Amino acid sequence: MSSNVAIQALEASLAGDSATPNMGASDRETYLQEQRTHLRKYIIEPVPVVAYANSWAQQYCGLGSGPYSMIAVAYCNDKVGQCLLYNPETGLFSLAYGHIDDPNGVGLVGYASNDALAEWLG
Image 1 (cartoon, one colour):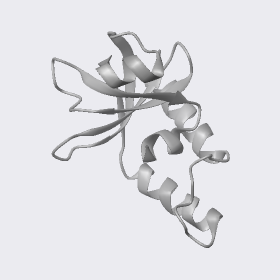
Image 2 (tube, one colour):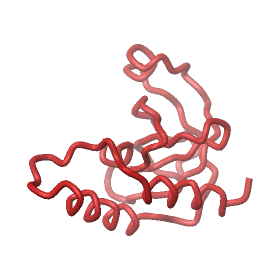
Image 3 (tube, helix red, strand yellow):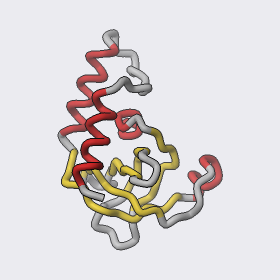
Image 4 (cartoon, helix red, strand yellow):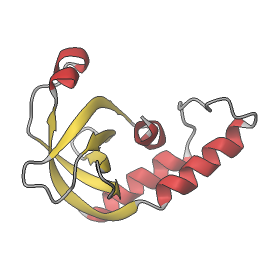
């Protein structure tokens, strides 16, 4: 899979509506646009990663332990490491925590959808 496909999927998702709650903001569309702009600051050159589901995601979201081969499309390299992953097999986005260069992989939160913004915001 070319990295362009993952970025195109991300941009297509961001161009659509989002199910994410507006967290009390009075103007939903302004809030969503601000959050899309914020997410775009973290878009990276797509990189393959290995993801694993933690015990909560396994118990409550029905995921197996993994490993899952995914593509990181956005990454916030802070203390915890927040990753937006794209699964080329399903076309869905997932949030994971960890660092993309960690040889042990990143930990899936457990949810997945075609709504990249909702996944990124958790």
